[in-house]
Image (tube, rainbow over all chains, first blue to last red; front, side, top):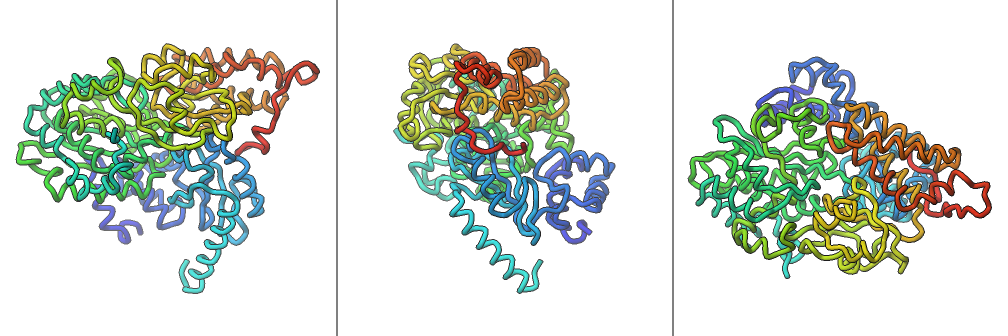
Length: 166
Length: 433
């Protein structure tokens, strides 16, 4: 249960706001961290903590793009394809990345490692093409750099599995 | 001249408390605390600092609207930077962190706020934690918490992470988002100054706006007004992106011309000719790259006189090879995705603009569709609670105003004389197609 695992963090979150409902967004991040996405049980637990109806928590989860409503790959790659990035080749980069991994937009590789999606402006227009890998920016990319990164992430994932981690 | 806002370009590490205080950090707040809150507001009003988030409204005026009442009052820092082409607040948050915190504290003192919420876009995940670490340092030094600087005023500072929604940069949507409600704009009045966060008096200011405040307190309103122009004083950060040789942030006094700005950023990329400028991201109308535009001073009023807006000064450069139908379609896709769905004209209008522009772009439309998107865009104007519904129309209407033939060329391919724009600007299908 979130309330046991994250007791200290949850107490800190509630202390920030005069109103329990304000904790929905930060608690949804905790639920996502724990379950890998905002799972139905995660929604119910956040609702209980905030003393609010699960439907209302679900509506918040659905409104924002950073909450995953379904499980994603271990490396969730969101490529910005808005105009400033697209002017310097982001669309081509996005499609080359999909081709390289052999998946469609929004798809996940069969090994469960990579999900690729396009995303709206990430405020990194001067460092395009770029993407967000989980919650970290990777900037000034081209396919050569990208291929090296993918190899690195594959190796890290293999290592983590060998170490018995998730 | 050394930078006033982007001080990290002159002094490495200035974002950290230790380095910041070695270079005059917190002298602005110290000065503010020696004055009455009303005197602080008067100085900021006198400086004529105008909101850097896009609207350009007088910051001191905004603060003066907050009523002198007991109980909780709030400052909300708008760090939800999401406008395509804008990445200036990020550099302040990352590298000039303490200047922002000090500016927010001066604002909080001026309105006697009890708490500051810094609303950081969720994608600035690590930046939020960095902010929290710097907030703790300022607290340890006595600038946050109880009886700040030995005064009777107490104030807390918190970071709130957004989660990916452009609309939350709209101030009333931002308040709803912090309250755990859907990030949709509120009906006004009441205005946030009277009834904002949790129904309490609230000032919402952009990151760059607040970063201007400490130097104003230290050096005075007259000094500030000596920079820039009479109606648009002070320094401004210009975000340069698109077909520009040296993309990045540039701090210049307001009043320099587009030409000077573009030259400073190395000119149009690959020696190409300039076709168009978006002076304020996707939200402000396109301008053609004419001499008249290039020689226009970068001030709120001069850019408005051209029929566009300086906005947050996120300047996107489009070169001669840019397909304007493609560019307009790109921007409409953004607004369709980011419309929060509350107001029908914006929700439905952005949907239909995207549908018809897609058909035009795919050469599956007729001349009537070109007239239709213009008509839909015009009908959307002024009919929504917030500015998004208006912003969404500007790529379409401004592209039609200057490059209408490019739209017609897409729908009349049979005519041999029609010069269809080359598709090379968009060699692959667009994301989401």
